[in-house]
Length: 110
Image (cartoon, rainbow, N blue to C red; front, side, top):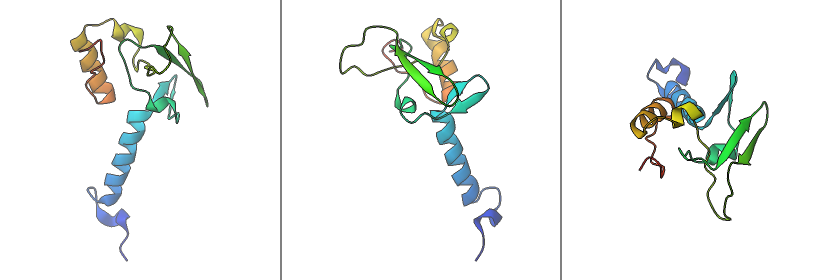
């Protein structure tokens, strides 16, 4: 039985590794010298008008409200630092797309 490791540079093993790496990088929060996937925090969608702030530390992270949040409102952190949020919509979108791989369509960017 041939091993999938022998499939060459475009074989199934590389495709699986690429898929898992993309899932990690698109869900990982980046801290000072580390990246981690936090099971609940990684499910929160980005906003350029965040209502929460994510504070990272190894091996945990915490979420803190930055404003009063009505019951039932979705929690939205920003995936980028404040300096990026200060830019216009086109620069924010370009940056977020380049780093995170999506075009921001939050209320502020619409």
